[in-house]
Amino acid sequence: MTTTIDQLFNVADFVTEEEREWQLRAREFAQTKINPIIDEAFEDRRLPVELLPAVGEFGAFGMYMEGYGLRGASSVAYGLVAMEFEAADSGFRTALSVQGSLAMGAIYKFGSEEQKQQWLPAMGRGEAIGFFGLTEPQGGSDPNTMLTSARRDGDQWVLNGKKRWIGLATIAQVGVIWAKDEEGVVRGFVVPTETEGFKATAIENKLSMRASLQTEIELTDVRLPADAILPGAKGLSAPFKCLNEARYGIAWGVMGAARSCLEAAVERSQTREVFGAPIGSKQIIQAQLADMFVEYEKGMLLALHLGRLKDAGQLTYGQISVGKLNNVREAIKIAGNCRSILGGDGITSDFPVMRHMANLESVRTYEGTDEVHQLVIGRELTGIAAF
Ligand SMILES: Cc1cc2nc3c(=O)[nH]c(=O)nc-3n(C[C@H](O)[C@H](O)[C@H](O)COP(=O)(O)OP(=O)(O)OC[C@H]3O[C@@H](n4cnc5c(N)ncnc54)[C@H](O)[C@@H]3O)c2cc1C
Image (cartoon, rainbow, N blue to C red; front, side, top):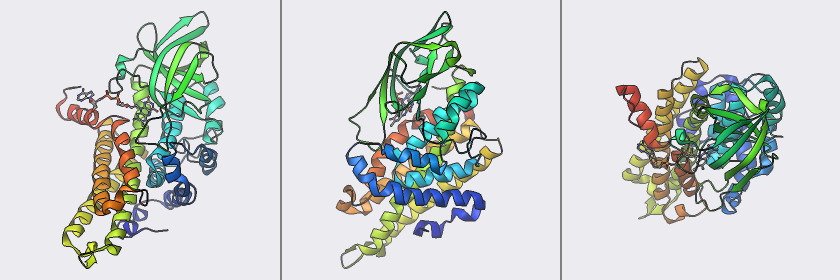
């Protein structure tokens, strides 16, 4: 099961046995369950929902959380699982992030004990699916422009508003909706999707993340009991804390997509003969492969470093931005270069590369765009917020 890229840079040398075990199990899951169906799912614009209970059984949903039947694994182990899932498809890894890091993360970090008991075990097993509703149609980079409102009416909350790009909401049983209360403070609400006035519609015309599910949500006088509010979440820093968990997973995940592209390009360079010799015998192709491998290895080392900092409780927002910005940007460059090495065949589904390329465009945009992360890093450097 080791790949060429693995042999040259073997992450196993730097992780614990338990972390390596998670990685190998995730690789097997990806290779035996996701890979055989992913091209068709992408073609059909369909998240392979039938695999979600198997992901629950595998133990990946919320795997780094403690209690509630969850695995209490390290952040590095989680990163390795995200990487192996994303080596198959970024869209499938996105489902892991939305359910685990975002929806479960919000309840785990900010929920009441009752909310945790009610949802976390079932979500961990993949029996309940959750979403995280922050972004609105008027612009995701600045969630402070949020228009969704939460008004108190007796012993109930009443939610109204619209959300866009929300993962998994049409198949979810529950979601965390972020809304401004009457004082203008952002609060989180646990919303069962069967509640009257809740409507989710799938966004169908995506050319990226086609084997993934994103939706628009309309909330029309959605009435919730007083205890639907997440008691620990007050202000925008709460959803940002959840986003940071997901951003951390992305720094690892995209290295899986990059590895998958590199593997295809290396193999092709050894077998494709043009001008009477394998293209891999041309120095210019080897230089490209070498440069991509250098960026892959740097990205892996960065992800591992962030993981170790996270497990030590020392990871900062600025460091997460460095990881998300760099690794997504480099994965996009690697995917593009590998596509060109594959020649015309590279634009077909004979190879996973064009699918990764298309998917990575979404990954660049969600969880903070390139520009947003540049501004976060710039603020760290200068002390000046330039958003
Ligand atoms: C596939 C996918 C899945 C998603 N899943 C979820 C989800 O589950 N839950 C959820 O809540 N959201 C989700 N999102 C939303 C995502 O977080 C937003 O798309 C993202 O925050 C960017 O917002 P936007 O698309 O409105 O772009 P905009 O905010 O309109 O940005 C447009 C452009 O302007 C740039 N820009 C914005 N502000 C500045 C500035 N101050 N200076 C310089 N440039 C700037 C941006 O970098 C970008 O290039 C998802 C999005 C996608 C595509």
